[in-house]
Length: 422
Image (tube, rainbow, N blue to C red; front, side, top):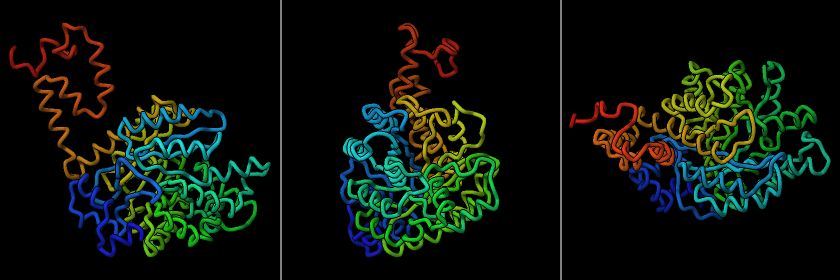
């Protein structure tokens, strides 16, 4: 039986019990959320995890970090270093988006080394195999795609992004309306090219029942991808985006019926004044499924600082109901991120998630802030490091001081307002 089926039957389940303890909720609360589909706990039956993470209504906002090679840069050791940096920075999950090198081996190594949930985008591997055979991406075969999904599921992947909402009808909306930057989702663009070139339906949509059967077999979670997410502010909240979202909502219901967990991915690039509306619409059309937003980025002109751009959007989105934030690194739109980029991206996303949790009144979210303030008043630097969101950065900055300055912050020195002895 799958996790949803256990929850619906009120059967004792160790995952639900672990999450209840970690989130400081009753087992009944978590079980009810899983049964209704408003809470998910991604975990493949073939994996053993050191950290169990749940995503959904009432829980702390979670953060994902993206890893992965490209055809231009393949270094497995570096990807494992990125994984280590992401986990140490506090990522709740990671996704392997590799498109270069031996993808099966890379995924095997990441799964073996990763203590948290791992997600993938199977169509990436299907595209790589297609191109390796000398074919065009538009010639991706549905049977090959399902073979890849089955292989990745068997390997132990906990959740997969599948662009099931891109079908002939939604592509027609895209073709008719047009966009400034078109389809920026890599997997989404593959499917658009295939549909436009062949006139055939997206196999992930046409054979959705087959996809559900594989997902149920391994109890993997479907992350219903936003293939038409806006890639710039000009394209935000447009027809293709909403048309796809409407389809995803229907697919969420089908997944729940057969006992498969599902979440819905969201934009993308969204102006700040449209973020709340996007969350509201996604929750409504998605039947309150957990929302996984890629940012959103609230301006298009900050390359090199898009970890900040996305943190601004992510904080507001999570405050309004987003459950899962995908971190964006400073390298976004510029190059493949390095280890330091991943660290900074995760920290920025965690700041956004935590700020939102405070605003939402999530249980125990304020505890660390109050502790930090207490030790800041006491000028206890070791305790401050313990409660801050990035102890590594804290220590590096404090190490820049001279021994004679260890008791102070050099901004104010002896004029520090926190000192009671002056």
